[in-house]
Every structure is written in C-alpha cells, then in structure tokens.
Image (spheres, rainbow, N blue to C red):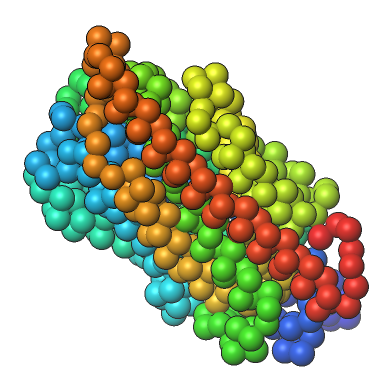
Length: 471
C-alpha cells in the first residue's frame, strides 16, 4: 500500500508543479534568456479558459481607451466650431488638438511609471480599477469646462494618467501568455479600439445632438467607469512569466541599433498616425462640405475597418512574419496618405478612409509581439514601457504641428459654401492647400517610420546570425 501511494504521488507531482508554475514560473539561466526568442520561452502557459478571459478583458479595455482616443476628432470639430462651449477654442486647431494628444500621449508615455508599478504591486485589480476611475473622472469633469485650460487639466491630464493605469496592466501581461497565436491574440485585443471607435462615434454624436456636450461627457464618463469594473476584476494579482521580466531597460539594449531605430520609428509612427484620426472629421466638414453627422459616420467607418484589419493583420503576421507584416502596413499607410488624402475629392477621400483604416492598424496590433520577438520576453516589460513612452511623445508632436500648419480658420463651411461668392471659394482653396501641406507632413512621418521599422528588421536578422524570410 505504501509503495502504491508513493507511486501515485509521483504520478501526480508533474501536474502539481505545472499548476504552481503558472504563478511562480522558473526563470531560465540569464545567458540563455538573452539569446532566446519568444518561440523558445519555457514559461508554462495558463489554461485556454484564462487566455479567453484575458483577451476578452483586453478587448473591452481597448474598446474604452483607444476607442475614446480615436473619436477625439469629434471633440476637435465641436470645440473649434462656432457652437463650442469653450470660449477660447473656436478655430484654434493646434491648441485644441493638444488636449487630445496630451490625453492619448499620456496613455502611452505613462508606461514609464506604470510598468514599474505593475512589477511591484501584487493586486493589479487596484491599479486597473484606479485607472478606470481617474480616466472617467477626467471625462466627467471636462463637462464643466469653459476655457481651454480646464480641458488641459481634465480631458488631457486626468484622462491621460487614468487611461495609462487602465491600459498597461492587461497590455503588459497578455503577450507572455501566448506563443503560436500571439499575433492573433493581440490583434483581437487591439481590435477593441476599432470597435470602440465604431460604436462610440455615432453614439457620442447622438448624445451631443440630443443632450449637448456637457451631458454627453457625463454619460460617457459614468459609462466608462461602470464597464471598467468587470475588466479590472480579471487581474486579481500578478501573473506568471509576465511578472518576471526587467522593468528598466539595460544599457546593453540601449546601445543596440535595433533599439534606437525601434524607438525612432515608434516616435514617427505615433506622430503620423494621430493626424488623420484627429483631422478626418474636420476635413470632411470644412473642405468637402459634408455635415458633422456624416463626418462622424466617416470616423466610425474608419475605425470599423481598422478593427477588422487588426485581427486580420495578426493572423497574417502569424503566417508570413510579424515584422514583415508591420513593415508592409506602415509603409503602405504612408503611401495611402500621399495617393488618396492629398488634394482629395469626395470619392478619393472615401477610399482613403477605408484603405488607411486597413493599413494603419498593423503597427499598433503587432508592436507588442515584435518587441518580444526582437528582445525576448524577459525584456518585454522594460522595452515595451520605454517604446510606449516614446510613442506618447510622438503623439504630442504630430497633431499639434498639423494644427499649426492649418492655422486658425472658420468652421461650418458646409452651411455657407454653397451660397457664398468668389471670396469664400478662394478661402476654401486656401484651406484645401493647407490640408495638402498637412498630408505631405503626415505622409513623410509615416514613410520615415516604415523605413525605420524595415531597418530594425534587417539589424535583427544580422544580430541573430542570418536572414530569414519569415520574421
């Protein structure tokens, strides 16, 4: 009997170790870790059920955070219009876009303090829930704003700090829990941003028409916090291999050409990516004479296409290579700006909305997976935190510069252009010329980002000792 019991215990032992390894995985030898890629990571994976829950929570989180960031173009159009409730914002594209870019920039750049916090705090539910509350509070308090500086404090600073605390706990943990299907998993998580834009653009426009901007913001803030509670409940404590990596970037990594170029490309892509998102609605209203309702519909179409494309890009990346797919998406998004947004007619602009939506999501969906691929999962937390900090700085750069290029100009073109004389037509042509300059600026940013990403791909192959077509 004793022998039988001993044998039974030995048979059960591997299962016990496997379960414990989900919470306390064994860390491999440091030398082997530095050379390993994500496909070689020895950490035990969680159950499929938990993977599904984590991906679902991530989807809902990006639905909130990136979805709200992506519809800032509606705020941009309203705040700069004659109907604005902000007395010093009418026609001030650069100053108003800065509100949105501070908010979205802090979403990303907040990683520089959120990721170290994640590594130290045992209960990540508190971090995520606090972020959802602060983010929602910023939106709610923005409803009482009457001056631009009020928006800087609420819809920019409070919102940005909160959204970063809400965003990174899930985003930092998810990639470590997937191997073969990491690209598809992150594509699904980040597809939430597209669905968020698709749903929020018409809903917020409807709230704006029915209740006015103040109550629209209050409803949005309260709704965001209520749905943030179940999302936060998924992360009750630190999980597995994701908590084992560094939180500070080592100098050895900083000196690598791949890291420097990856950072530069991240800055440029974030700067370029924000410009169409913020000015798509204002272009359709001010230059193409569409109504604001149609402008919000265009924004919803763009984010809907982007949502599907992020999943498709993730699936494609798992088959043809994640870095390859990211290079393809960034370069072609820049080409689409030159080919379809520059001096766009109505039909041309519709084509741009769809094609840019398809292409622009590739970088965002694949950046986390390529970070683990190039630098190893043990360096994911530190590199991801720093790269997103750089992306936050890039977001602060792109849209405000585009706003300065546009300068101050009259809104509400759609209501007056049809009956105006030659002077109004001249004004419209001048405005179109300014938007052409914005398109050139944006296209250059995105193409330069694509070249940087491609060079990272080449340097990574060199560092790993040989070229592989699938990477």
